[in-house]
Image (cartoon, rainbow, N blue to C red; front, side):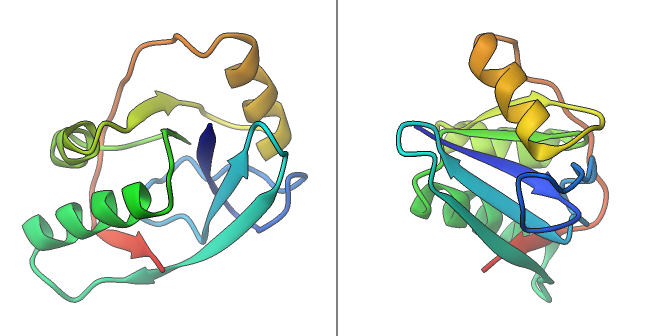
Length: 121
């Protein structure tokens, strides 16, 4: 299973960025192999609706099953759910702490809030 965490930096010891749309990095961790890959966040110049779809599709293309982040709005949440991607809210701490908490209890329900649109490449 692959889990993506919004973060201030590319390493597991970096802090979570609770802002889905403005996080500097999306850190993807394969929970089976523990392989970690970081993707930089760029601003999308398309319409908000296109950007939401593109972000969700890109996350699905990366093979991500769950996103750990602080804030996603209804549109983003709906787009991620349309791609069968779960969203779990985390507020602070290091990436590895959020990942450990998720692995200890992966069945916490989805939540979300959101503002500006960005996506990861």
